Length: 379
Image (cartoon, rainbow, N blue to C red; front, side, top):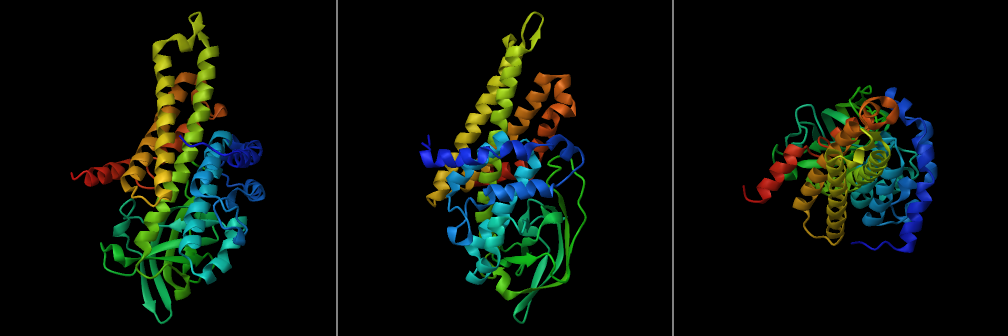
């Protein structure tokens, strides 16, 4: 078990005072599918976006585990799941790859604005015919002189409608060859690059997504992250951060939901006794406790090993699969335990369920994670 230092605990507490302001109006914003610039400005003001970045860019210089520790509490304290998702996506999809793989020039151009949140970040991987199967992407980047020309489409891009900087993965080599993918930093106003309109979706409604189109989009060779052909390795690195950071927020959400269900089970009376005295209700709460504790342990243990540069490919898949499905089960149980109150929008529990379902799809579907684990087991 990790022993958090007093400094880490104080850092976490310093952000928790913002949670109420982040959460204000979350049910109405979800209903109206609103990405609130006012809320984003509060996130910027809080300094949350600075967590894992070097101090020379205006960051707080925190490591992966400390960043996760703060984000878990964000999931616990902020009820605006879409805002949480957009903030974490910004950190891991744009900030992490630019800081880790960007040239000195790219860092000088972008990192201060990423840390500040003045430029919102997104990454473009998924395509209409290539979701979790990133190796089948069809968007191409053709070298022409000292530039690359991008052609193709990306879909379901979180933060897309509001982003200023996109980390775009495109094919520069043979299809199916892991050495044939390259990552680019692409600015929103680049000629030939079109950002589509927001797409209505089931959950995470305050985090908008859209389709992107590249039609002869010329990107300077200086905007390549790493080197041409290294995009697969960059993507693997970024997805590890993405899964660890996004799903530790789900642990916070599950913890908050568990406490809410436990309080309800002790105080809600039916047939002359608290509903928690019924075994079927108690079983749901026990399962919720097991889900949150198991997910938390897998995520932090995996993060420790990742920080020590151990091979955590299987651990990442297990942690993602376990946490995403535990979160859906937790949200479903909460709706059931609260009955009619769980079904109506004003209690926010049906929103939790809609948001949780997305976790079994993004960052690689549950089916893909099972296939990945099976393959590593030699099946």
